[in-house]
Image (cartoon, rainbow, N blue to C red; front, top):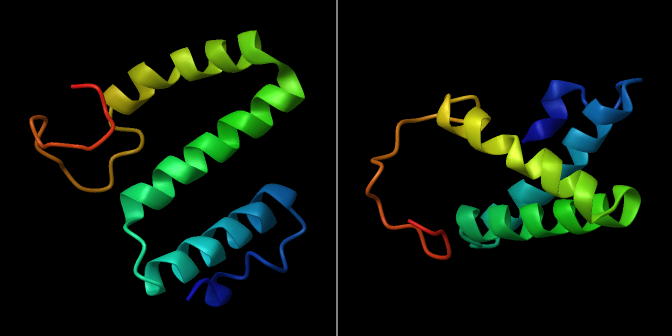
Length: 91
């Protein structure tokens, strides 16, 4: 449970936002929703909101910069075989 992290009480809005995302993620996981499906939904929602706020070109530029960050391991928590099948992802 994420309540022990103290994020909800933080003065930093980004940490409070993270608290709510983690709470929703936990609720989905306990409801049996696969983490990768929640991730796809979260990415879609995030990109849609960013496009509404900043426009398609700015979000496309930001998203293009994610490739090198992903490949460098910035978002890797545990190694995943590169040839593992991932539904919906272009191999």
